[in-house]
Length: 282
Ligand code: SAM
Image (cartoon, rainbow, N blue to C red; front, side):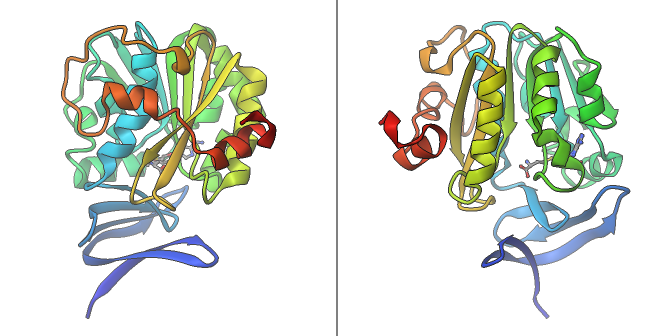
């Protein structure tokens, strides 16, 4: 009999793919976890019924969430990743020669353990115990509260704003993030789809605009996620992505990211501009 895995993307829309095998099905203290080999996306991680990552398209997400802020910063030495338990963001961050340390804080040790077991390509930096990387199992909200003036770049590679990820989408959390960054620090969070989750995108953008002198939104194509049009919200204390010019040479190959995308990712369609700024701005 055929097996399928499904994400209910909205009350009216599902994404279903045929699975050749369900490799793991269980739950941690925080969430239900499924690992499956899908016929369309390769091996996939599913948390609380939401598709998190797939071997086939993960590079689109991880390169977008990491390389855009890291190449915006002229000298990113200390990076903090909140969430990111599959290890893909950490894998990309350690590739930057300027980066001296990457601290990753995920609330769910089970996701980390299963990612190392079932996703060796994605969790590579964790598996190989990359010397730049420190992995902590803990709540990113509490971790951020005690950090001050320390990080060059903070990445919030979180699940959706339900369950343990809910508090990562609040004004207080963004205030703590601002405090944890150095004077020229940059913050990026994955913020779902502007096509499907307009209210969330607008709410986060308003908070970040209120707290950071520079707030920008950028998009990437990620086939696994609702609508395929995903966005990231960026808050910056000094460097404006709209003024970016190359500040150093990229020393490693990428599959999605390039210097054109560093700029074009911030070019927004009018319906997204309307969502963020109102219709008056175009
Ligand atoms: N790329 C993914 C996406 O957009 O769907 C996110 C992947 S990553 C697996 C999300 C991680 O966020 C999970 O491992 C989850 O445990 C972690 N997480 C959720 N809430 C958290 C919190 N409060 N503190 C730290 N990590 C958290």
